[in-house]
Length: 302
Image (cartoon, rainbow, N blue to C red; front, side, top):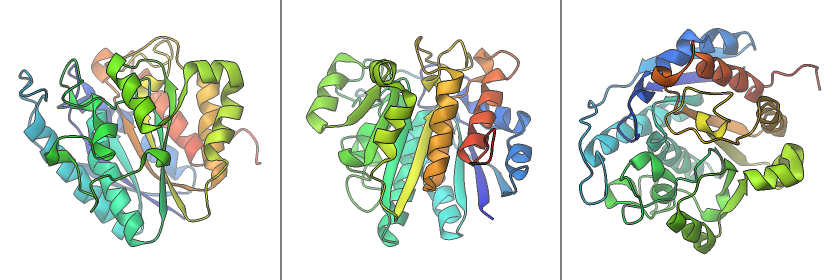
């Protein structure tokens, strides 16, 4: 029986709009604890981490709220590291997507210490590879991948023990459909694997997920970083930066079920749920359904 450690990080310091800080409690209201226990998982809700409030000020040197983002990510890093050291499955409940810096950095350090190969599936409408030099807003929830690849501000790189927490060949993006001009150049120069919506339209979700999952070695630690704006906003309205034309409900269910079938899933971020923009907690309820599928829920026993 897996023990799932729920870690709440109620902050929107990296985001462009307020409200993602209510995401962890929205997931609790949507029944995440009960849903996981229904699948015979042991669940420990660690509560919400503490961190600085959102000062909501303008960017400084191309970065907005850098000090606060560092403090929140340090808290996330420590909490995820404790869960991994205890043999638990860390499930980070955000909060905005800047928190993936702390989460994935802790996981990368753990994988290096235990001889595991880390692979990340990044589910998002955005590629999040901006830097302070290219970001039009300075919001750090658009920069976590750049930081994890070692191209962020010094305060946010190197936490895993090496400058880059992950290599460009160890992350796959799915559902991308909103990329800034300079991000497109970065994607090409870094050689990132981006399965955008055109790829899904042309090849289908089944073929796309087969491409992503087909070469996972037995010692893989698979981490999923799930930004709810990956979904079409018609399905999931409670996000701060929704973009039309995302995967449908059924496409995303297939994605999650195929990840579960791989047997490699070992950690998870669920971020960018914004109850202030939602309709009767619909987006958090969808997230709980998809989380259940990641843990093996399916129509039939396969």
